Amino acid sequence: MDYYKKITTPEATTETNPLVSQFKVTKGYIRGGFLYFPPGSAGLLHVSLSLGLHQILPANQGEYVRADNRVLPIDFFQLIDQPPLEITITTWNESTTYEHSVDICLFLHTKDYEEELKKKPGFFRKLFMREE
Image 1 (spheres, rainbow, N blue to C red):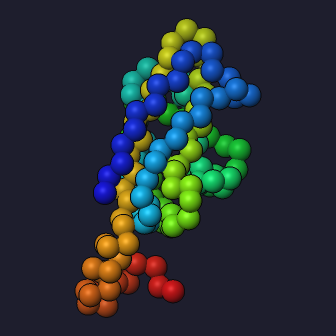
Image 2: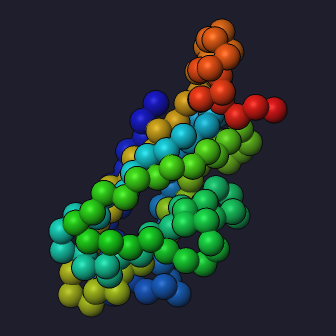
Image 3: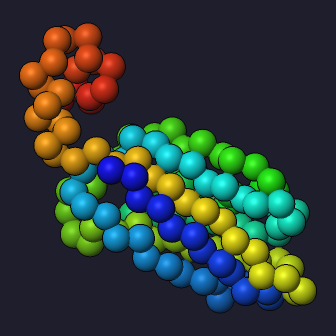
């Protein structure tokens, strides 16, 4: 399943009073995705993703991702199996003149996907699943 959300952050949204948005998902595994920063944000829009109280992107707590006219791939494995089933998106915008947007897409595999992989030959299990 692919989950998509566009976040538009108003001008002069500060780091001390950021825009906080929720991204509701189902139980499963985030296997990747991407952030797209359209042209014009000039690195002024800052983005982080969290699951509960744990920041998952970027991995170093208190930091933010920022770019301009770039697609930034997300490559990590994150299990989501406990409530709340949502990703928190925190953004702030250094621009005092323009609002800026980021497009966020997450690739999530459900438990059904995991069951299907268990039926595959060992190579596919090793390639796509975390061994317990």
